[in-house]
Length: 105
Image 1 (spheres, rainbow, N blue to C red):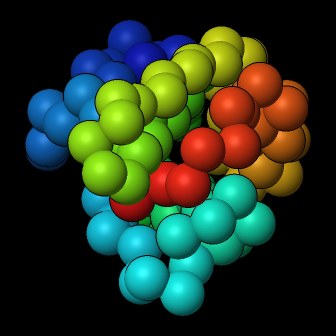
Image 2: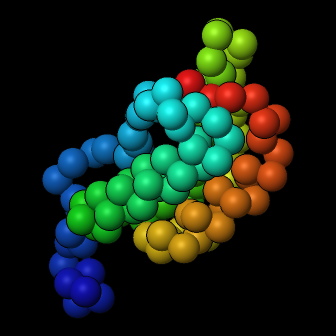
Image 3: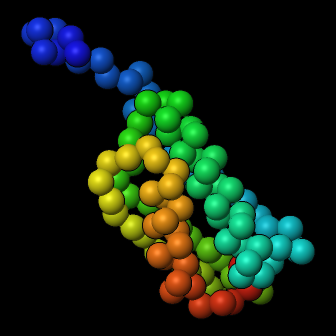
């Protein structure tokens, strides 16, 4: 709150514009349910890093490659700035309704 008194606001040292994680699914998890479970884990992990760095997110993108090089699926969501894992997981649930049920890689 230094800026209220005319001081300079604190700016994070890093200039990261995104926080992301990748994961190659174990063969036992290369199905729709396994992919969703891993996505939830990755979103939880990313939201922890977001809070640790003191950042907020206002959008999220998900990309899933299919097994046997059958292409990929991408979707994104926008929301008010937040660090709340629940908001990210709810966005995932909404996006996942459109997932084509093709086995993920």
